[in-house]
Length: 243
Image 1: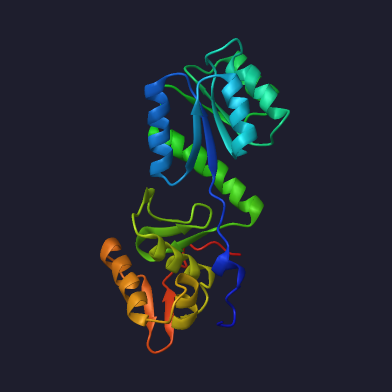
Image 2: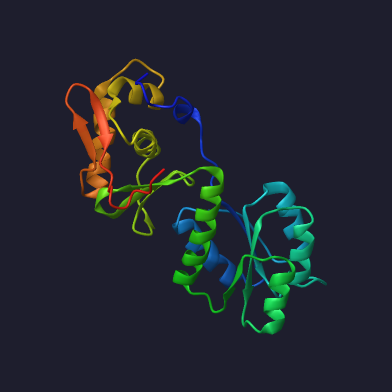
């Protein structure tokens, strides 16, 4: 294995940011799911009442709950949020048609992380959740690798993005980009990359095809070939955060 490449990155998978939606309007709930999954976040469940919400918290241990104020059942979203606080340290963001002093008071009482006003605006949703997931990243030591051309690899979701859109490449391509970003200060040997991606006899043509596919989909060559040695990622050092 190449010196400087941490072995844990060859086998470990980063936990995806998990979100529970508690919303009793089906169309609104599906819109939220669509927006979140398009950005690479994981929606573990969509429920419309407090009982199912608490059950989902225990089952999935989400990082974030999007909680509608008005939900089905005898308890409001605010009351259910208070119960969630007794069993989970997840973030809570309220979904509401208006924000008055009473709403703000509820949010403060349960130490909510914010609220989103209806009708939903995609940019507001993404901005709010990006801040929360970035906060979770900092707390867990995870990071985002900024790549040239406006691309970035999110080590939380294990997905490649162009600006705010997920770039659809295959799992082998994502694994390759992850390995290169994890060793962003140097070149990774062909053999090291191949061993991490396949469990058979080395065939560099298979590795070259994955690299070719990334270049084809992205329309830019951010994977540099170091002749007879290996590959390295071309990062945008003007945007790459200091570690």
